Image (tube, rainbow over all chains, first blue to last red; front, top):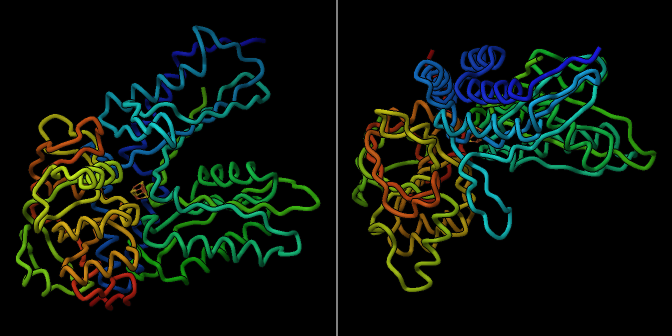
Length: 282
Length: 181
Ligand code: SF4
């Protein structure tokens, strides 16, 4: 059975998601921020966590964005193969949702048209990066994130040798977190992509940031590695705002894919505490 | 906690120590990547800067647009190191105070030391909270840059820490002080 989905529904979902995540942390992050505040032993780190909690409250109640960097939007459209889109272009519908959200809700336009030469602001935060994926069934699942660049800029990728193995991965992830330091607005959330190709590992590291904080990897070996990396990250004592507290990261998430016999790609996508994402099923 | 009104006397700035928690009031100018690039280009052409740089304070911020009835939208600090390339030149011209987040280059730290300036760090990702401490905003230049335009802000008890003091001490190289519980 073919199910019809009008593209105006996609615009509406994208718009509403952009609007919501700019002002409201997801409950899992709020909970972790609160726990982290109580755990901080130092005066300055504690003050930083208090500011973050107060900020979350003000943002939500007064509808002022959590952070002024309301991000570059990435959208995933997972379309069931039984779906027939009507009413126009799905691609345009996504961009229209972003445009409406950013222009109507006083969100910051942070996109420039050309990366190197012109760098002219497009004024409505488009274009978003959009990924399409065909799935089974007749549903459309939309995932969306708006990623700030203070943390995005601290992300790194390395084509490790297979012989470097687990230690190579651990060292690279921890080194990346250390180099990110105060620039990435710690406490951070760290997405790690292991395997695939050069580009696919980076893609996976971004996808890792879409998971809920308490959602560990399904594979026990990777779940243990996530826990170990989180502990090692916190032992760096970068702390909130980089002021040497005990909470450097709130979570480390790993996504993996099969890879080539000669390779071990590893990408680390650093996100700040303002890790804004949302999933909606149509 | 100390309250500092900007622009501040040199003796007041040199009395601050890295790690001090302070509240800033008074006048600062917003400027980030694109505005810095234009200011440096203006200096190279021998043109004046869009505001009086002598003893001035710059806040590295690109706020969200203000909604009705507010002075400004969300307005937390952006990463300061992106401005490192331009900072020593602006300090040579008279800039004394910077507000941002993250580490600075050895050249900037040296410049701060030589000119008895101060670099303050504000809480990254606390733009909603910090917007409450900005009571007035007035466009000054480069409005075509939108969020990157230069805007004159009036701060009121804007919370931050002394990041790098006039002797070059750096908050990111210091241990935190134990909290009293
Ligand atoms: S890194 Fe995150 S919290 Fe920090 S300024 Fe950028 S978006 Fe905001």
